[in-house]
Image 1 (cartoon, rainbow, N blue to C red):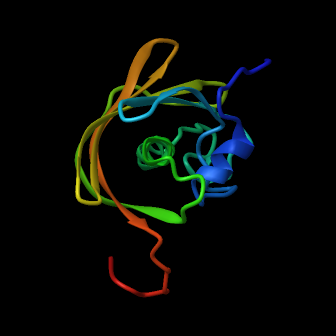
Image 2: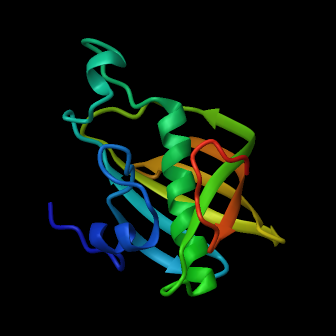
Amino acid sequence: MSEEYCIDLEGIEMRIPHRSPFLLIDGIVSCTAGESVVAAKNVAIEEPYFPGHFPGNPVMPGVLIVEAMAQAAGVLVWETLGNADKNFTLYLVSIEESRFKHLVCPGDRLLITVKLVSNRLNFWSFDALAQVDSRDVAQSKFRVLANIDVPKTPGESL
């Protein structure tokens, strides 16, 4: 399947620090700075979590769907701030609500829509919806902390 993204995998890696095997989005379908982003994840049987979740019945873990939402939010924050020359890391600091309605399995194409709800100081709040074939599979409300131009020290608190 030929994919058309406005931001491809290489572009995502320029915007957020995640890398394989924990980079959980393949491309950005659309992005409007300060508003929303739509990311895609093609769920492959080769994903490293499938052998253990669950043997013989592979299902994408719900927490990884939420992580994919947070990664898409990271791209949105980067685009909103125009951070081509800045170093920042987003930390997921709270998940207010998540619901999982349907299973996500190998062969599914997960579309993740993340909408910016608010930005106060360096805290950003989002509403997110994940869909497969236009069917809602998960939704979440979460907040991230953007540490901008702050050196990272292992074990240092947020």
